[in-house]
Length: 269
View 1: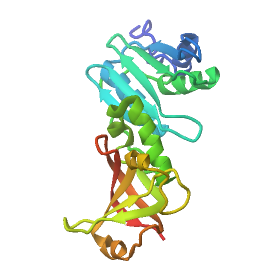
View 2: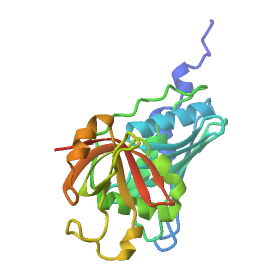
View 3: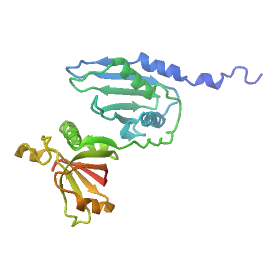
View 4: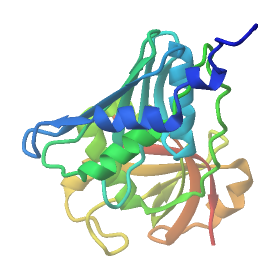
């Protein structure tokens, strides 16, 4: 009888629970908080191509509001990052895949950092524990549109300054497209000769508007906003040392001039 010895197709496809089980069983860690802890795990899925693996993990990361720092479908590499919060700095996660269906994920904490092992295991397995066979990369998921991040100019400057000292090269990919509502004190407005107006925030150490602690503060990282053309009237009415709020999008960090540049900025009342 035809088909009598055929194995049902579903039995050939590894279940999500089986792949998740592999991820948990293969989870390892090494190092210590003083030297820096590293976490690793992997899964193996028959019939899973490099491109499909990276595409699936990428979409899982986007679904968790992670940032895609680097992606190469053909090489089988991916770098995702959990954005910084009040509890931790940005946490980059590296993923590699090959055409044998093996997918590996790793996370390295900074020296002096502590992490909950069970929470890290769950986070890593949430990314690779549901992989399914596939030959081509799935369409890219649309990232949810986040609300602007509320932050003071001084906090933003200090955050990027600290990361620039660690690795300035990653800032462009880490912050691109992020929207901020920045609170602070107006340190000055450009004259608009270029057709655009720029507002610079005070980011010195003093809590009193208009007061800079010392000449050394001249070399602190600053935050500058390029206003939208519609904001000319707003620019002309600003006063020095006035407390202001601006919403804009991160454009770049100028490491030579120590300036965080935002563009498309509008005043917030």
